Length: 433
Image (cartoon, rainbow, N blue to C red; front, side):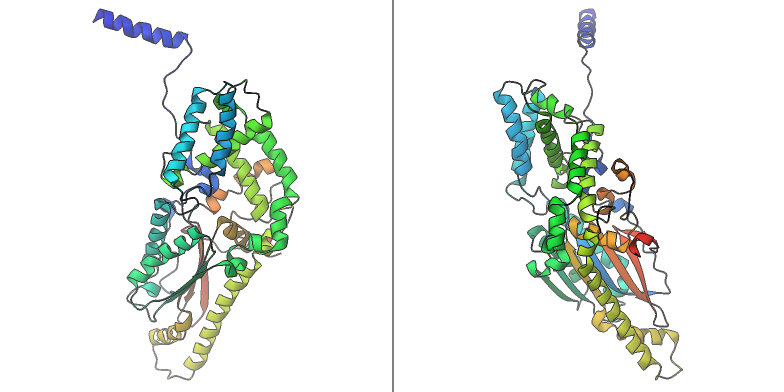
């Protein structure tokens, strides 16, 4: 026993004298996955609609659910740089492990680039079920009319998958429901206006924001993680090292969405991971939000706003027609029977209309509507993470729901929910100018 104790003591001494420490890898915060952050179902709030109002219609705008990487381009980029270091004999043990990770991601994807992962499909089915449970007046057995669901999506397969999986619970739980879905490039003005609008497309590619963003990347993305992989004498330029770190981040940020083990500080520290997110967050802000540089993103979303206004107008017209006819009925009608009569006038508009697209679809309309958290105008770009976060606004499966309700007098009321949370009435000068 004494010899065994002595051996353990000598081993401990050797470890301490060599400067090595034994520590477990720490998982990096999920919120720093940025645009690949998973939807937070734990933050979902109950409906704020009072019992005195009856929900009659929902306008729903959604981003696709959790997905695989859209392509292997970032994997190939990481592999190219690390293989260069390997050829030069400077690749570290961590670098060899990183090459193995790239192959694991490729294998797990199995050619399903850009498609919904099992997590994404589960997200959408859960969102559909929660919609049914939260609005039984529309989708439940006590509804006053048969609901109609009309939805459109972009032509991208993962978005079509998202629309279909979301609607399945609505169809399963609502007998007599009418469902009409469609997808394709003909809906680009609603789902992919950021490429369909020539001015917007030009802004995204080479607007005035690009030079600011490039400087931010050069100043913010650290080279240390790349040096720990490729070696300190790899011969790679700082620009190449930053590219390795940035592209590696764009692989790591998607691991959770694919159902793979979460990224850890094996690859970069929390501070280094956060720096990468700040750069991607700034790029999303410039491209898809109103800023001091441009209002083009909001202008691009104008067709979506017009669609929402058309829906609201149709509901108001139906109620106005109902009120006109109701005024000629007997005064002996009870308040409840009058309300049922008014609701029956909404039969053609009763249900849900949906637009299924991308984060790039939602962020501009959020900015145009003045959704809280989407209208930041920071003086210093480094302050942006404190006031504008793509992870908060458009996680995977993000959605905006505008719920229209009526009262007993036939007045139309609207409330809004963002990612399952109730939105306070918007009173933001940025969305009124």
